[in-house]
Length: 232
Image (tube, rainbow, N blue to C red; front, side):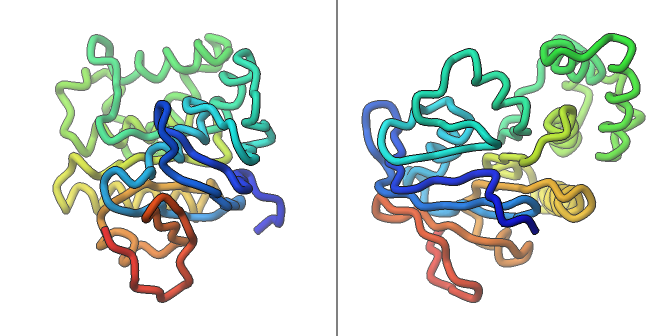
């Protein structure tokens, strides 16, 4: 593991709209990390990752993600920052009016890939998530777990340094969720891609080990290994 963090916050206040939800955040995420952000609903978990993606501005403290300083980041730099990130949402956020292939091609074209290179890359990422036979399918023809696998494939298109996953199993049954977590774990181990996952499900981070940051009482602190104080 490298010593230079790919995500770093120092004394950062995290906001949600006009309200500060986390005060004085200190956090370092390193290449190859698997890290959870946990806590009860409304404690600022999603606001932290929205700050990582420059969706929420950072006005106080310092923050950097994949080489970009978040304080005063220029609007024209935000798309470049986001290309270094893979983002996976609870509700998949696939384009329902186009095929799996077209969903992925849309992202590649939007991020500057040449048409000649898109087919190979699409099939590579579909194969990596076990969905290589689903390219022609429409999203509504897929199960929830299959849709989330496509969403993970989408997050891999630009070979991100880190995947940020916001409750990626929240809409899935237990068995399907296990498959998604096994997939994310294998991506982390095989590709060395860092994973930052928001969850309120304690069973997940107890079974799939990683670093744990707990949001509680307007603070977010890393728990020591074996600490069982997290309340979710």
